[in-house]
Length: 91
Image 1 (tube, one colour):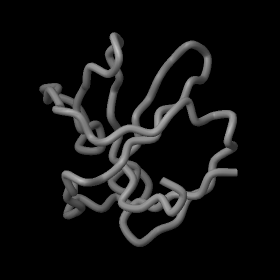
Image 2 (spheres, helix red, strand yellow; image 1 turned 60 degrees about the horizontal axis):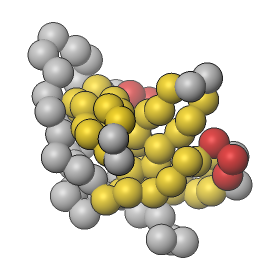
Image 3 (spheres, one colour; image 1 turned 180 degrees about the vertical axis):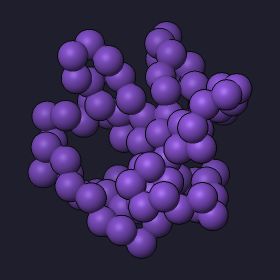
């Protein structure tokens, strides 16, 4: 299990779902998408959609992205997804 936080809310995910941890890269905004879809980023030769989990689950539109936030990348069904995390104790 890997534990991370989105805002002040803790989340757990299976460790085998986490591909790797990264610093937040430069994001390219995606027009006409939901507020929780922060944009797309180029990471290690691939394009990854970046999701603000706090906005998605808590409907917290006021949540801002801290430039020091971490991204947890999931690899499921050949799809990669980046998730903002405001803290990750083991990183």
